Image 1 (cartoon, rainbow over the protein chains, first blue to last red):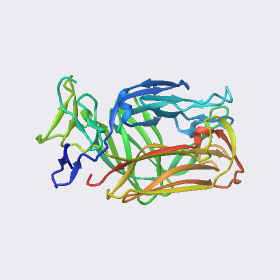
Image 2 (tube, rainbow over the protein chains, first blue to last red):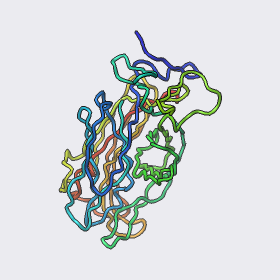
Image 3 (tube, rainbow over the protein chains, first blue to last red):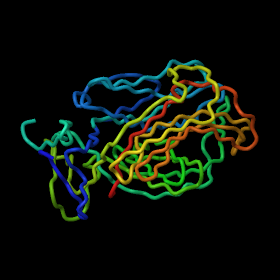
Image 4 (cartoon, one colour):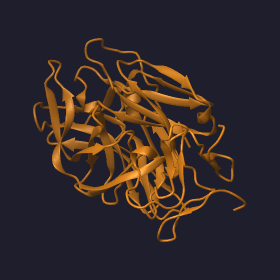
Length: 104
Length: 250
């Protein structure tokens, strides 16, 4: 290794060196009611990640409908999230939840 | 940044930047799944039906949880991780058979400060919030995978039933790899109703053995029911994803 930070644990195991991609959480977005959106953060450009915490299980949907699970994409420094349009106004529900995102 | 500390990988990726939180291990919990119930859709009148299934329901404390599972004896996934808006989250873990699962909860560095005498390096942002601590175990990303069982768009549609789909990844280097940021594919239907209904469901789940991750999207029959020919659902219900995290020496 030419340069960089190394950290060992008390047993002498490397827990960080210059080859390690680590997670840096940037922020969160509360997703509700099927609202899509996007945001831009330069830190995402080196590689971004999402971690969605579903507050609604798919099994909470109605028999005559479906559960609209959100989709995510990261392109460059832009993170986008979206929900499909409802098929049944009465019986489709959105999967709400908390989206954490960050750089890695 | 006018002052502070930064660290990069040898390929130029930022590890610590002096302003952004890092993700550090906060807690490790061993759970054992046992016969219980999962939600199995509602009648159009709003009555929640359930299926019998192997589950563990737990409440965790975290600011911004990144939950990693290590499950050698079963395929495991997370069906729900609900924010209780009081610093806790209600998590439901499903497994295909009753099994022991280790749950690693990573959180923002400032929420996972180790106790006891300090040593090493600590990094703070301009507001004095801890963003990295050499005593912490940072979440190291090995890989990210995602897909859709049907290769579907997100929209409402109909697909032929798929009974099983499997994938496997092995990561040279780490001795132990877990799965985090899990997205679960799930479709199903009760054919009876009420509590512990008959019916069927398909769910994606992940088994971790050492440095290998096995993916299994499978059909589960509950009680007496007819095998489905088609799935009518939103395409995004078939989305799955996970992040492989290095759990070696944790």
